[in-house]
Image (cartoon, rainbow, N blue to C red):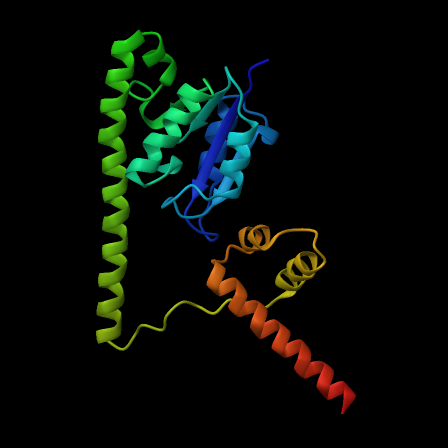
Length: 212
């Protein structure tokens, strides 16, 4: 029996995905079928998205809040959309523009529908990617201004707290992969291994103090 699923994405751990989740629930989507990522839309290397895609079958329906929640990379958005709607033969609906982005409507129009879908998708994907570039440019300009005023302090250092310790132990015990650990902590690869190095150095220091 076809499933109805919802995909939600925010760009970072401190952003709130509640609004998107409420939209999914208003369409009767069960909690177990709502997939949530807290990660940049620059690529599709996202744990929950990949899980949803593997779970997706022919005839399923996926709701997303808007096209940029799916992603912000022009080529990848088009490839992922076509993979789900044409290879898997499932459907996608963008809630902020259902008139243009409801793959069921395009399928009902045959070959001309495919042509129209490709054109609309190319246009909106391009807009989504350009917006991502503008965001990065504004961030870079903001950092330059802050540095010139002596107010830029860089990213706030992430504390090695009990959550990190628990996930670190789970990872070291082989129960999860390093990628899973990074996702759970919301850390990029370099930051994750830097924190691991700091944590392990601290453990060695504590051990040495006890031995002394």
